Picture 1 (cartoon, rainbow, N blue to C red):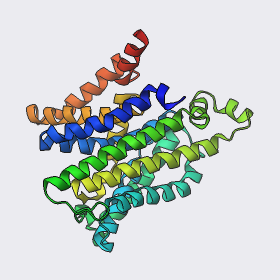
Picture 2: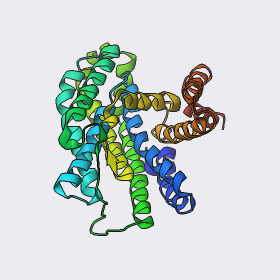
Picture 3: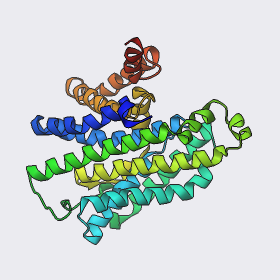
Picture 4: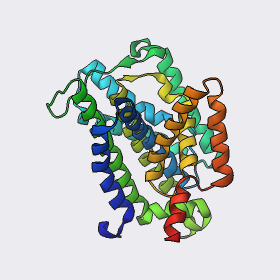
Length: 314
């Protein structure tokens, strides 16, 4: 499908100037919330990619954390401050690790895949907690980012980081959409429906799963690097099981119908969390749980199913 006929690509392309314009008028707290949501939404997008192939990763925080620590360590220990270099490291390091772990992960399905991914994530968490040189449980701060020699400060730095996050997140979503609408992307859905028939057709499901695992890691690594640049700090909690669980939560809440769904869902979830904590500080977890339960009961396809249903009706 050409760009001119692909509504998703057109919508994502238009989202970039819309997000940049919104960033100029939104209050600082809401702009920062949107910025962090886009970063974590990319990790949820990695979960969604695997869900389309019938796999659920309970350890996507592994690559989210690797992306953040790759950028953070380069900045903290090597003095690298260019945001584009740090972002590149946030892609390369998780991808390299995923290539190696993928040989093992591609052998498993269902709950075994989920638990093994969680195990790897918690191993990284345990290593980071014990690493005093990396700040142990406290983590460490990143130096101020620069942009191809441009070194803004104050409000200009905050907006530049926001702009980078928006452009990077949407660009990754567009690239992933093109992948999912390609033959290899559709094979993932065929594996979810009937892996044996895919094998009969002469395609290796294990190879396809391995490729998807690496792509999901790269996407999550971008999210981790962007989160590190946005917050200016990294810590082992990026790999903790609750972080990975939050990504699965967002993926289920949003649905797998579009690459834009996890990015939007992450922002909506953060809004619900903020107001739940503000108005019900002692029972906010129950509010989030009730929200999830209502979505599962009445929108099993996730929030994006409302958009898809409206599109079919039109």
